[in-house]
Image (cartoon, rainbow, N blue to C red; front, side, top):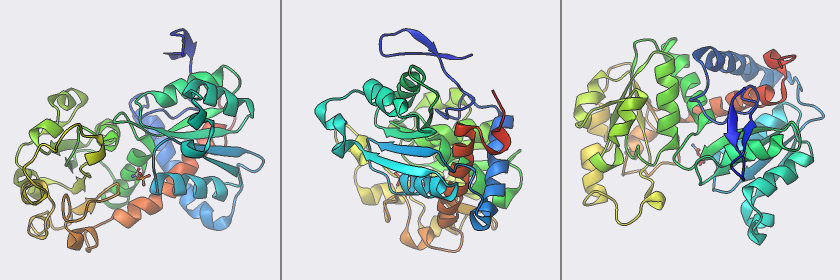
Length: 326
Ligand code: CP
């Protein structure tokens, strides 16, 4: 069983089969199982099955969110769970309570799962160790700093597979502020595990060379990858995570050099499509006409987020295809 350091540096075991802390530790088979279940649950939203009746799901967000939080809460509601929403700004975090103590406190109330977003990489891992010190609550990472955003990667994969059927041998371009992007890291892990070639592009200081050791291929000129990609994923410039001024002369210059402009989008393969995890900086990394145009699948990504998060919550509490697993 895998282990993790607790708040005193002691090694503690973690239930990787229930927690979802990242894509990196998952196998292609585990990813496929979640995606297969999400496709079934996409229709169960209509049939009204309630596999999480009697369970509660806590959403604990230390950072802002629209899509992830709302879709986890809709997912939990669709499955029949009771939802407890905690924003750090109105919780005992404001009195100085640590992640460890918050985790132990919430887990002592025995919710089925705690869905956590935090600005620090590894915070959900600490929360998982805290939860396991008092009970069996599963932790789901809803984004930890620039580390991972596993459910975003799963919904991205589901969206890609809705169109491409298989990712084996496909070319996916990820363009923009990759250095600050937990989405890029999780997508890189997931897409390469499922056989895709991932091309990364953006300003030199926002596309670290280390990403090549994780399986990505860095391409310096965006115009070299637009015509060869089966899907083009644009990423937001995360101004709020930058120390000092952004590493490009102006927003207009960024748009001209790296943005998915109308002219660039016209050079995509005829059946290629555009993705963006949101929120978008319209007119910077993507032109509004492209974001809302016929090749954009952004709304489809958002919709798939509900089904993926339903599957992840089932896995967290051992329901559906995970019922009876140890
Ligand atoms: N994609 C994403 O994580 O969006 P939110 O920050 O709105 O949850």
